[in-house]
Length: 302
Image (cartoon, rainbow, N blue to C red; front, side, top):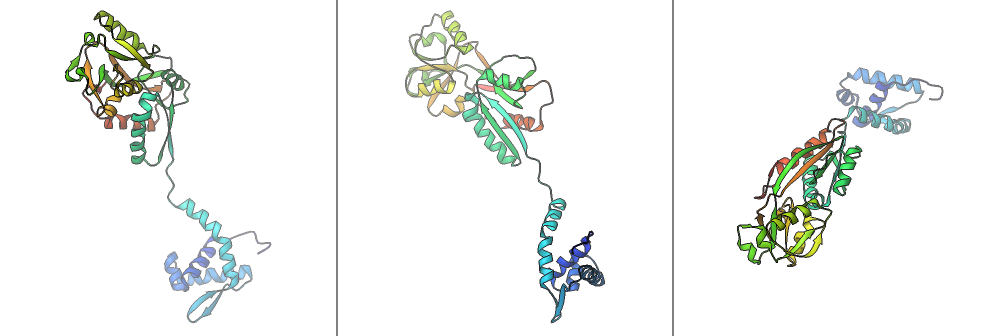
């Protein structure tokens, strides 16, 4: 074939069809051509190459070694054609998601799993960070979607309300307060209390409520997340006042949650950049959370 600068795809197709089927009639049927068209293509290919490609044997055409070698060399060509003509793989969309530990480790992990099961062509990258870093990450457009329970406004960041919760008191199941329908601030007087750390604005808000009710619990420990505070309650260390979302749905079998009579409310937000449209995959994930987040007595849609 040296010196030849042109190729004929129909001739190569006839060669492969004839090698696979063994007869011109079957090759013609496979390619939707006439038998004479198959014969002409093979004759033209043999004349161009100067080689015999098929020998007749018992009513069938047996490929020669030259035909076999040529067919092997044609494999990459037809594999490439199959990729071009075949169904294209859907683009794999990626969701860059960021959230604080209280929302990420249990709640979001569970919903990411169901989201990806329902959408196998999606990909999620989850970053766990402080609420301040969540807002910063969205502001710098390093993430498509964030969740936070802290209402911090920043230029270029859009907050969309997701959940609204009233404060709850978490107590051990055998605690006297577990017998009450609701817990009032004065009923925490002299009770061992697990408080959130001072970096939480809710710590100061709770202290104000307790002072106004002349209630003085004994702070025995501090925790930086509501899950950690409730887990300390589960260990029998004391009681705590926290945002029930999402901890109540994961700890209700171990700890008793009672409404805490106070003006304390918590809001959970979706965060996106305000500089460009929200990606479709982020909108799909928000819709997934809105539909599949279970209802609890303490939390409702915002």
